Image (tube, rainbow, N blue to C red; front, side, top):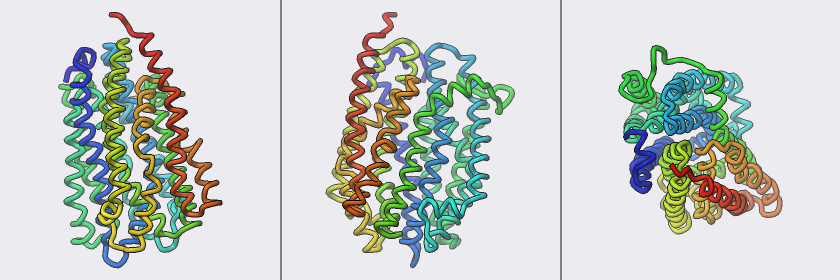
Length: 450
């Protein structure tokens, strides 16, 4: 799709063309994560503990993803805005920065965590029983972290430069190939959680190679020049500034997950941590659909904001919120009415199943309002409004959720841990509504008449 069409084509058509591949890709990405958990949860004799060990790795994975979004999301948003301004020369300079920053930051993160892996895992909620599973999984994942960062970073750039279907196709490839390789490495080769990690890195490596070939061909409006690596301090500062919001949101998710794991161990057990991991995977499936909608909205909103088309930004935002809310309402129905069926995909352990089913009903009782908050936060990021994006990113998880996680369990025990989520969801919704009303008025007032 030519970038100019983002300024002229009907918003509903554009959102469909960009969001549908994004939704498929993000849903596939969540299934990609779920596949490991499903297979690991059914490892004979140790499935319940293995899935609890995998849940302990979530904060580290979130932190790694935060660094990836700092580079990838910021750079892709910057490219979309530059294309909207017809500044193709600068847009081409962003791509080598993505490669350099992902390699450097990914390597530093891997080395640091590997050097202190045991204390880090125990800090995030591991016990002597779950540590071996978490360790075996993370050693391989961390060894391939540069590959993971580059794959997701270049995938975001493919989408931002007008080829969302290819970005979707590469994600689908990694999911399908991972689903095929997982049982082979886990059960046939008897490698357990190590096999799941190897399959993950291997699939991402293949997709990364294709992405590099794509940007090296010169057929895309944004492509590699003579060098794949490059660095511009100005571009890096701008893109990292734009990516700061999602970076802090994912970092906050890391802190929150760590604290939740600690609270679940204090007021529950290792199985409670495993239950939270299952709930997170199920909720993640619906949230990834919302993130796919966000991916569809991002180039449309960023481009038109750069072109001075404020009313088109407002239109794509309202349409995205509508569909995101619909998705979250469907997730609410599944989590409240059919939690047992959803949890059964991950485990046959009766105790783990009971804890997860009960916790899911409480955690997701206000799920329908989450879509609005996520899309609204993403809009500020799409428009380069870093401070407001950062505030909204932090509000739900740090400003509201962390205090609730500390206070409510003092009175209600483990029930308070589960209930902290809907409490923070409601408060974050109110704050987001106030800020988004002001932004919409600003977009209407600043419409470029050209």
